Length: 143
Image (cartoon, rainbow, N blue to C red; front, top):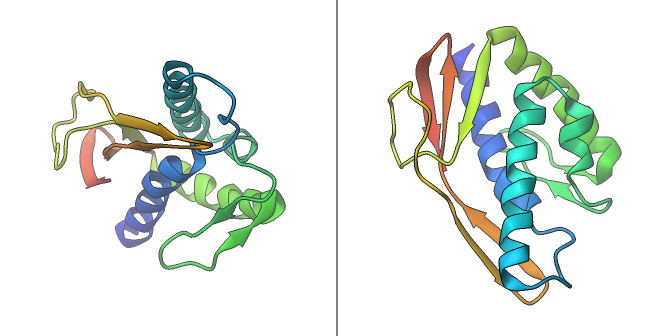
């Protein structure tokens, strides 16, 4: 069971970083950075809240999701199908993804670090870490 969960959370961490690149081409640097951080916060709230539609809404219409150990998903319909199952499976396990942790942070306490955000032209990205809690215990960490 943890094998599936680990794949799911690693997917989540990678996807959060990739999902931040949509829709920020016309804003100033600090506004872009704030928007990117907001997308990731909203992604975490939707995912942990079991809201696959909310997670999917954060992706561009032509987004491609490339989860490890699973087929790619192209476009919102396929991404929604992936997250509907992934979020439900994670919810059954009682897991929570905590974003923006220090590398290798195994403490069950909330994360204290900030992520690094950058913008170049019409692309933006966020680099950070995450940990996965199940019943208050850290079962995985990732980037």
